[in-house]
Image 1 (tube, helix red, strand yellow):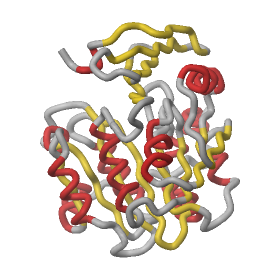
Image 2 (cartoon, rainbow, N blue to C red):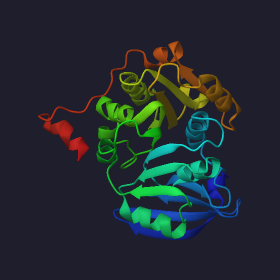
Image 3 (spheres, rainbow, N blue to C red):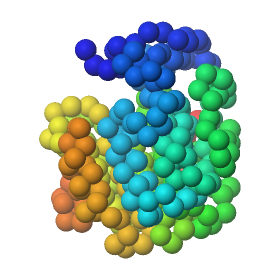
Image 4 (tube, rainbow, N blue to C red):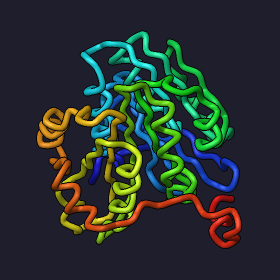
Length: 282
């Protein structure tokens, strides 16, 4: 039985058109799992915010840890709030950090704030669409941008394009890093397209994933990381972290990533006159 199955219900409520369930993990006092329509979305340990249950969250956190020397405060923009797992982690590991969290689901945000109080510190929550929010941010204002944006279990097209990546690059400081969580299934065509999309804008890109994902044996998560400056990604450190993770992973970079992408074309915003594509952005 998996850890997330050893649970008892704490809160179950309709949130808009979705059903949200917040459960307690009997194996870890103070730990909660947030489900949306039966799908695990966030795991939050209120007594230890540095405990990260999901492997993809640990991979994103490895990018956070590698962004600057240990405990150095950072300015971070989170696109997608969920249970605020990574904002809590960053507040605990880098006290004094300035964080902005963009979450469009007001009802979900209210539930999380009520049941899982947010960490103290310089943390501002903005209720907005991720694309609109990042377009309104000033240039060169963040050390980190972290994206985990989903709608109906899919990453919306308007936060997955070259034009969106250009907005991310614009708000990053010269040494800034971007990391994004993807879900994909064999043969990982979407991940290849997204790696090509980031590579069309940002000069240094890598992919972090479990071996089972890259061998095409399962559906799951893949993390991409990218930097504004060539050679900025701490690939050796990310590789070591991935290998030592409980769900051992690998990092694809440079020639290995080029082979993975294998001619995949970057994704662009649809043309304004393309009515069928525009419907995907609604």
